Image (cartoon, rainbow, N blue to C red; front, side, top):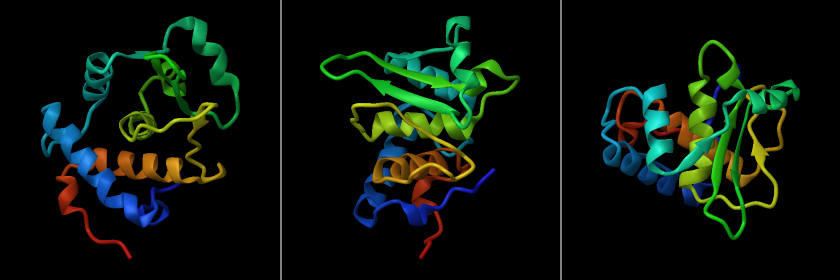
Amino acid sequence: MKEFSTKRAPAPRKKLVKKIVREVREKYGIGSRPFTEADFRAICKRRRIFLLEDEHYRYYAKFPGLYGCYLKFKNSRIRCIWLKSFFEEKMDLRVACHELGHHFMQHEGGVATYYRPDGESRMDANEAEADLFAELAILEERPDRLPIVA
């Protein structure tokens, strides 16, 4: 699996991503402990993000390179997250946090954006921010203590 890189997020928004991760950790009682699947599910429940994990959505797991997507319908409050790992033995927490990153960073888009951990996907600013959100969210330490990366 390809490692995340904080270098990909646009510089002016790195501080904003760190601030939002810090606020999420504090608001949802995560603090400095590792982010868990239970945290992901609790946040989605409180934020009213539907998790598309019933058998009807298993079909999408057949698309190569599609590991997750965040859907926000324009002019609607309906938001959904689909993860390929819903249909596997263990949830891929990095992809789950990446998709939550799209939600908290308020990314808009006419089409769903997906995350490919093999690095083959086109890297736009929204994907870079969601990557950084995921990286910071799963750290055991507070995101404000993240080492500076040039």
